[in-house]
Image (cartoon, rainbow, N blue to C red; front, top):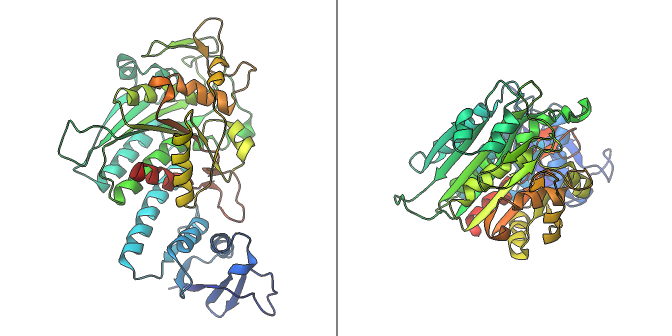
Length: 429
């Protein structure tokens, strides 16, 4: 049996023969992480060291010494996660509350990362919906109920966006509706609604993506995974408010049944949308979820999606993007991210963006007037499906949720970055 490597955080620089700039040095089966060798220490040092140990093939560690706090332990796990090989970590703490929190984070984040990293063949729209529902029910069997609306039943219930995007696939599109109600009162008001984009594979449809851009499109259900993981973590932390969750799940594929450029979709709220780009499909499915969520008249409404490449161009892959017409709403998410050591950045959303998706044949089109599916016009499109001019609504474009190639902080694949932000938003707003 392999002996676990002991990993310590230390303040001083590494000595000879490692060199003063070395992040790691070794003494037998002990690895020393030198905090001063990493910018943004100690969290960056812990996460970067974990990546290096994983790269060395170290498959089992125990965190030792007095320098580890809960955030450093968690940063280490973020970097130590390997989508191909199950690494084992002993958190190295006997503090019951700390262990409870770390395990809650790991359980939620592992589900987010593994379901997002799953192959498009394995993770169909229904599999995604059922996995999310089952995971949440295990956490709170008496408080969680759910229903799945699938295939042509979507049309019967008026969820035309999900149906149109998903009808090109032989695997039916679905909407998952979860009700987390910790009270026994069936008439309890809904505090918050969460809506997630669950495109389990995005070819771009007839606006087909280049192969290189399509290779990572199993991750286009990252929004659905993230809001589910955020709710799971909030439940584990003791969420006592009623929350409803809507996952809008489909495959965007090409076939004789697929939706086409020039199609017009009429939604339940009577807004008509001309399809001018089938690769701007995420907003089409989210519209259904936002309409359904709005019918519950929640106090707050948050949606999350891997929606636009434009957001990644603006903020890179280290930050998630935040959009709202209201400063206070945006600040709630930004504050939650800061408190959870996750990175988020507000991008512009103004009333004039509502006029930047014109159509000659419908109320609006699904892309901006210049032909590009920009981040601000995408957010403005979503606002059309939120009542009261977008009040108490915030949109997260998950720019930082997926790593297409490994770097010194993250393995290739889903990161779970944003899950803690959503959990704190649910608990503290």
